[in-house]
Length: 267
Ligand SMILES: [Ca+2]
Image 1: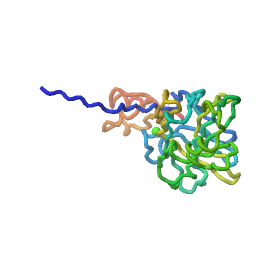
Image 2 (image 1 turned 180 degrees about the horizontal axis):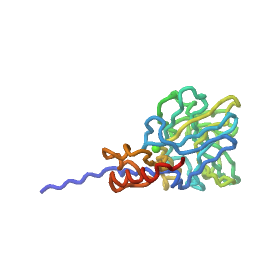
Image 3 (image 1 turned 90 degrees about the horizontal axis):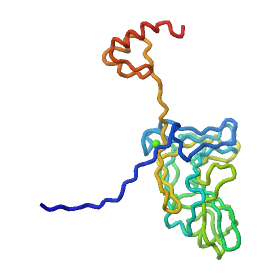
Image 4 (image 1 turned 45 degrees about the vertical axis):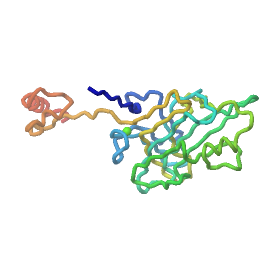
């Protein structure tokens, strides 16, 4: 009997990030009416059924973000083991500035000093045009990034161009900066943009890594359980009793009894 062995690439299960399991992720906004939340949809997200919604509120000069601390302190020399891809959705009619950016706060560590920088991947700067009303995937690692360092030969450009043109000659490493407010050096963000912009964008299916030791795919989901309660006896019939979870019923009779006993509930 011949036995053959197939070696397949390991398939890494996505890490589900949700209201009850945010892991290393958390929301941040500077707007009183800004919003960061897990939602179902919109449309058909690339992973699972939900995503993260980021909205800057009524003032588009504010921002809304979801951060992770998972990569803080990790170092690389040339991004060789890094990973950066994600998917976005922007509703039709929303500002074109709504496409969530991927921002990485880094330190450029040289033999003599540490230079802070902020690398930003903005879907609006890429070869693929942003399109509203559909989910789009972005290969950020191989896309164009902006930098806060003065660098006339860059902006936006590839990470290879950044390494070649924007850094001093005595760089030892590039590391993800730990932010003073503890929110984490890697984030997805909408805004800030013009005050008149109403920014709303969604993110899902993000694969992120920096030094190769903690590369993960994140599936943002809204797993909040919606409580369902029957309000009339007909809802219990034809198997309907099985659809409720507040409370859960053993059979149609117990469902009907519950409705009869609670007929005046809330009146
Ligand atoms: Ca999802």
